[in-house]
Amino acid sequence: MRIHVIQYPAIQPLNLKQDKLVSMNARRRVHLAGKACARCRSQKRRCDRATPQCGLCRRLRQACHYEGQAVSSSSSTPSSPLDAELHLGVLNSSHIKDAIATKLTSAPSDIFATYIQSIHPWFPIIALALQDQLPKSWSEASLDYTLLALCISLLCTSPPASSGDGTLSGLQSTYLHIKSWIAVIEGLGITSLKIVQARTLVTLFEVAHGFYPAAYISIGTTVRAADALKLHDYSPPSSSPSTNEESAREEAVLVGCAIRILDRYITVQSGHRPLLTCSTLKGIYDPNKVLWPTGIDKDTGHPLWQLSRLFEASTLLDNIHNALKNPTSERTFNTEEIRLLVETSYTLRTLLIEEVEDADQIYSGGLGLCQTGILLAYENVVHKS
Image (cartoon, rainbow, N blue to C red; front, side):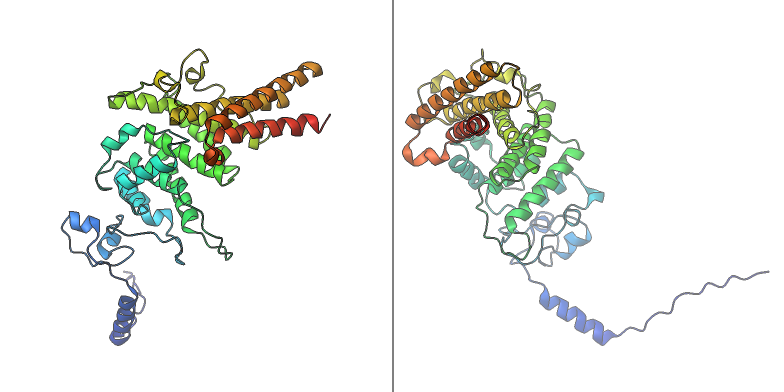
């Protein structure tokens, strides 16, 4: 009879004095919050108030958020990786929303006020009716609105001066987290109009900061996300929407136009790559259909009027780019076509200058697209002739 003897590794003797000193030193390094975290308070649990994550939330692998906690852009401590915040083994929409909420330092109403002041006047993709439906706190907010709110904050944040040491700024960290969250949300099969709006704002952020090819990749996924929601099924907006359904229809048209504008500009910046919105969202761009409520026809300061002008300028830019990249075999015809497009761009540019107050010209996206089209034509025709 054989007896198998199992040898266990030797157990190191406990050094209680040393362990106590290590524990005391670790405790000294922990910064305590002023009160319990939001999750512990809501569930009436005892909280040790450790930051950035309390001990109980850490053990349960749950997102931990302290009310009023701000994410400092100047912090030297690198942001935790996505898997440390979301814990992929227990991932659901609630965990994602809680993780996103930790990045928000303003109330839902303040975020929307920032959008109205900084984005809506020139890129109105969110209906103002949303103001009456805002949650009182982030604990009551939906996942898609929380993501949209963080994208608004991202777009409205001024970039900090470069540190030069290779560390990520708070703005860069937030941008990378948003990209990761969008990928996770997509993987879980969660989609909505607000998520498409969030994608659109992220793409606009990438364009504004010159993030290529990230902007080209983002506009592709945004186009497909909009197509998955059938936003191309055209329904004209009402001049005074009174229901959530009417507001959603209005937003669908606005988001569709915004995506087309971004796609046209990104295509020009990306060289010979094709336009992505040629085969999608066709109904929105039917020239025989009126995009805007008739009540704003004479109100040149209305955000919808500004977006319509931006759309016109992007159409001219797209036509110039197409004429240059896909010429016919008749050189005379090509030259005449470019000349007419440039003249039209100058005409629209003159109208925009008359409509936009002098102090606001720098904020007129339509003027910028007109100038881009004219310069593109001169660069490719005048300098080559």
